[in-house]
Length: 77
Image (cartoon, rainbow, N blue to C red; front, top):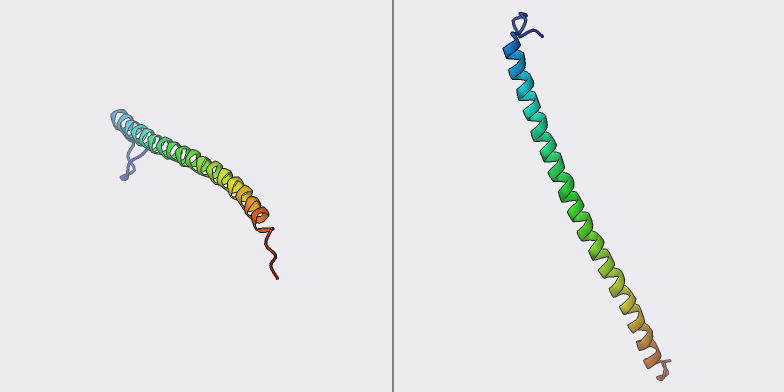
């Protein structure tokens, strides 16, 4: 590798650059891992909400049927 002046880098400089790059990659990987964990948590939360909505929908449908039967006694014109 060469620096901006066109001269070759010393081995110690290369090691420092590689070390800095490795640290940056590790930090980026940690941020990605955190984002994936947050995404998983949100997905699970939404799945729970979806199940709850489905259950409430079934209950509401059943109650609507009961109400329909109860008012069917009355004639509406």
